[in-house]
Structure formats: C-alpha cells, structure tokens
Length: 239
Ligand SMILES: [Zn+2]
Image (cartoon, rainbow, N blue to C red):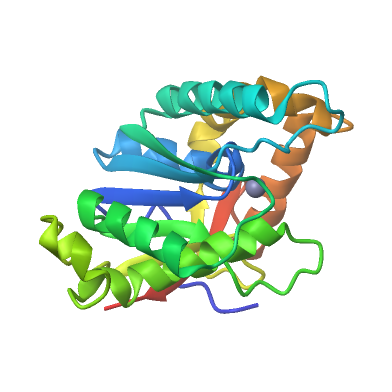
C-alpha cells in the first residue's frame, strides 16, 4: 500500500467542489467526508456531469423522466448533507468523453466556484470493471483543475466573460486503487446512509441491501489505517 499521507478529519478547506459522473456518485464515494466538511464550516458544491439517465436495470421510465427523477433524488441527498448547491451539466449517461468541451465546462465551474480542493474520480485507477464515465470525468476534471483553470490562455472566452483564472491547490481522487488519504466517517456513517437512501430509484440495484455493501466498503477502506469506517482518496498536489 502507498504510505498514508493523511488520516482522520477531512483535509482543511474553505471551499470544496465535488465533480461526479452520475447522481449518487458523491454519496457513494464521499458523503461521510462531505458531512464532516459541512460540520466544520466548509462550503461544498457538487457538479454532476450526467443525470444518470441509463441508471436503471429495467427500462421502466423514459431516459428523460429518469434523469428528472435522479436530479430530484440528488438534490434531496445534497440537502441531507448540507451541500450548498448542485449543478447538472446533463451530458448523456454512458457517453462521456474527456473532451475539450467538457474540460471547458468544468474549467468554468472551477473558475466560478474557486475551490481549495476539487474532489473527483481517479481516472487512472487500474480496475477493468470501472464505469467509463468515471474515468472520463476524472480525466476532464483533473485537466480543468490543472492547468486550465489557472491560466487565462485556456478558454480565453471565459476570461472575456469575466471569469478570472483560479489555482486549485489540491485534488482528492475517489475510487482510487492506491489511496493515501483516509477520512474517518464513523461519527457520520448514519448521515451517509441517509443521503444514499435519497437515491430511491437506485436502491434496488444492491442485492443484499445497500447498507450492507456500503458498510463493507467503508470497513475495507478503513482497515489499512486501523480505523473502523473510512472513505479513501488519493491526494494530488496541484500547486
Ligand atoms: Zn457513477
């Protein structure tokens, strides 16, 4: 294992931007950390690249109405955690690429919100069974955080429209196969479950129950550093 770099409380930040591929990704990967950030006075905002319109085993709904349902669920989960706001980019689920257009959109979001920490998917995690949208969103978000958002020469039309360049000091990557940052979520684990339960349309997708799976995942993440329940990240210095 990579040597732990940070264990315990979430890394200190005034403003955190979480960029996820689908509604419920922020809750699965980092709801406990979000709850702890909000409790510490950190302002947290979400950007969701898709609205998860393919995220249902049986096609009971049209894609558009499922997207609508999932946005409402995501807003409820964010409210449960005290997240300040949620932005939906509404790209089609399952069809996301690390494109220049997506980098531009995410750069604008970073320049607008001006976070100390960007949290997103690890695009380089070596898992064959990984959702391709996760890889694409992580890659585009990192490209936006470094170097695009800090240099006015990237997407100069944004500068002309009044968005100033912004330096993001740190990225935290979730879904990583080599985490080095472990946030203790034992004190807020029930809050994580409550936020996940807001994603009602997705709860059927977990044979054996959502809670069992989420608890096992948090235990596995915590074990290498001797915690009970944790969320794990890879810390990337961007400054
Ligand atoms: Zn996802």
